[in-house]
Structure formats: structure tokens, C-alpha cells
Length: 88
Image 1: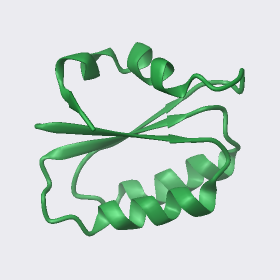
Image 2 (image 1 turned 135 degrees about the vertical axis):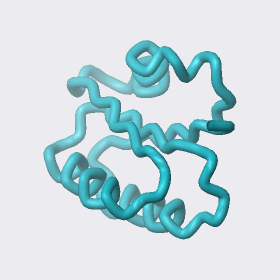
Image 3 (image 1 turned 90 degrees about the horizontal axis):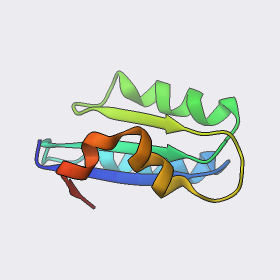
Image 4 (image 1 turned 135 degrees about the horizontal axis):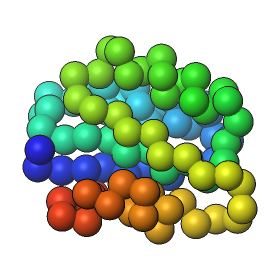
């Protein structure tokens, strides 16, 4: 895998869905999407789960409880193999 794309989200289901639709039609498939979720509701998880089956590449959902904005550092701490990859 050449690339990890990190998307941060917090209760922005409509925008997250639009972003995931965009990635679902990519022709380059050698990447993964990591969604760093800063304590969103279950609706966010449902949207992510609805896309996982139709994507041709991995989607990783990394979630923390809502303790203020800290999603990027949280994603790196909890998906530490990202440190050895290219991030976008």
C-alpha cells in the first residue's frame, strides 16, 4: 500500500458521506482511508459501515470519545503503523 488518506470527522455525517462517495469512484486503488472520528454519534459509524462493503480498498475507522479536538494525534497513536507510511 502506497498511501494512507486521513479524514477527520465530528458529527458531520452529510459531508463525510460526500467525501466517501468521492473516494469510492477513484481509479487508483493502492491506498487506504483512515477516518479519525472525534467522538461522533452512531450515525457516523453507520455511514462508514455502509461504505466498507462497496469500497475496493480498506477503510479504517479510528474513534475516540468526545474529549475535545485531537483527532489527528489520536489516529496516529491508535493506528501507529501509519507512521511508517505516506500520509495525505
